[in-house]
Length: 91
Image (tube, rainbow, N blue to C red):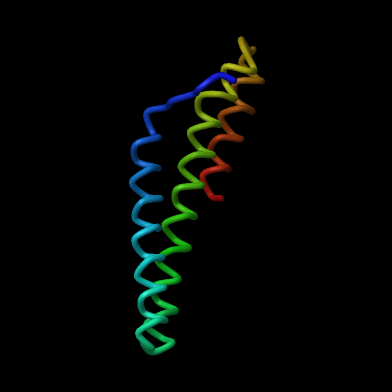
């Protein structure tokens, strides 16, 4: 198995660690009997942190791994690849 490390990985790890911290807070809040609104807000923060980590990973993969796999492209193919990368940012 090949290990792939990209420039975005440290940022992704930070986002996931943030999500882990939020999730620990949610567990503690439930155990402490906190209000559902407060818990829901923290759960939302967990979701957003994981979503952002996933998005960063996918976009990094598109930017690096996909281009490597496609190899050399003519101008039309290059334009289509760039369009795909641009629309993927809206995920």
